[in-house]
Length: 125
Image (cartoon, rainbow, N blue to C red; front, side, top):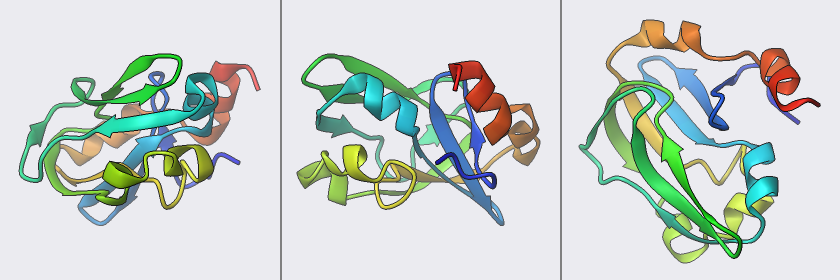
């Protein structure tokens, strides 16, 4: 349910690192709390992002929630599918519905993020 090779934030984002690139998204817990997702606002490719800073938002029928970058670096790709099919976030938040890819500016930041076990403990599951 919460992949062991991902790291997590207390703001309910996940990140998976492959070389110098981090793929990030929102957690299963976050999408359950939001309900039916109707819109996703993502940064443009080339945008510099900072760990813990807002990079976009997810809008559901219940609320709008900010997305925070789990790492610092530069956005190298965004998931274009979510522009026309934001509901994918409800279907596969840890897979096909990733949000952005970030070229890591400070790889050591990964160490400050939660493990899957720590995240599960944090959300009380």
